[in-house]
Amino acid sequence: MSLTSIDSCLAFDIGGANIKAADGQGWSYSEPFAMWQEWKRLPDVIAHIMNLCPASHYAATMTGEIADCFADRKDGVKHIIESCSLPAGRKNFLFYSVDGSLLSATEASQQPLQVAASNWHALARLAGSLAPSGRSWLIDIGSTTTDIVPLACGQPVPQGMNDWDRLLCGELVYTGMERTPVPALRQSLPHRGTTRPIACECFATSQDVWLLLGNLPEDKKSNTTTDHKPATRDAARIRIARSMLLEPASFTFADAIEAATAIADSQTRLIQNAIGQMIQNPAPDDSIVLSGQGEVLAKRILDHMDWTPCTVSLKDAIGADLSRVAPAHAVAMIAQRRL
Image (cartoon, rainbow, N blue to C red; front, side):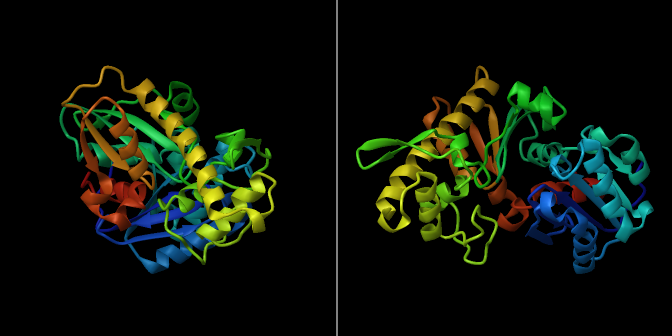
């Protein structure tokens, strides 16, 4: 779709666990949203956010179409398009495609797989603006997944364009800072000089690991954890104990830190191996743009590799608030022809 002049644009990043929004001018918003449970509420949530930041045009990128409340991706894309179009009016809502274009609701409905799982591409374009020359990569460690996107002269040059091809080639690694179940990372954990098998049940996630190790902030109001208890270090201790089938009362913080360190090491190796697979023959003048909740983890991984590229922090470049909603911020800027 060819864009006419857009005075203002509010863009959404509609995921499976969160909805984020930005206007490309500094305003941002984020809230937890369990798509698989709350998909019927999506039109109301979109309308509420629109009321918080009215704009002349609206746009969206998405990953929430993969939620298992939908029959398939096409069904998920259809629901998201309809949920966005209902409060906005079909003519005013655009949808970001993995080819870098913005499609009308009608066009997106006709090409659902072009707009499915598209937020990584918008983020890569934003990252490319920070590394406009030579060879570079975006490494984005988010709450659920890790993206490793090659860039050439500031433009994304991925091997895969959809999530299944990206998963196959290694540009998408399905592990992140919050939502990865502990049994996906370890089958056993150290405990007071022994090694104990753990339950193959989602009692704890990577969020508990990084809470315990101090890499994620506590949030007493959060109820998006596995047991819907607060995202605090003490509650994380209890969840880790439960994953080992141990009594929380006798499971100390020292026990929890020992287990969390082992889990963190496994996740770090997983991501480090993926980066090593994707980045062949690294050179000193290569650049890396780091983004996501796991930016600190990515820096730690690069420090352990025999390679010292120029690194750029998205958080430092655009600020912490905008970096948390970076794909939405990027889409808003693209719609306004500023990116």
